[in-house]
Length: 126
Image (cartoon, rainbow, N blue to C red; front, side, top):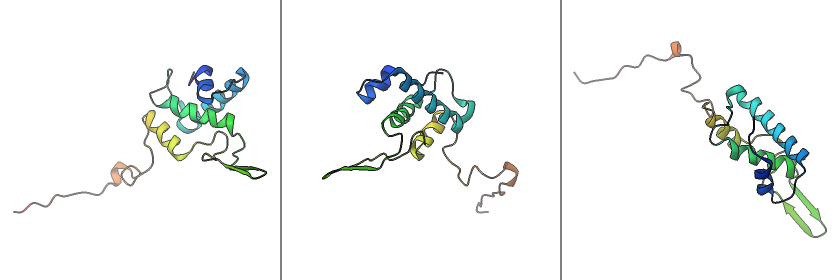
């Protein structure tokens, strides 16, 4: 299954990229997605999957160690995205689950079995 092409990843990163690195980033991203949504991914992937996949793959390649900040002499750089490798953020997880038709998260309306739902009566004036 192809989530994105190497050309798309290179365009996003704006830097040359060895094919082996792009392939590894793709496989790690696909593995993380399958771990989250199982076999619900289709081929071709559903709308919304590519943007999440490219963001995760770019992070795998640009910040594999999850560095939060670096300092060299008097220069300090802090990174907004301090996730480590292929860990999905809550937003990415929510977007991925929504794209494959899964609930984005548990709520009080979808965690109880149907037979445990309370009986509701509607009050009407007599």
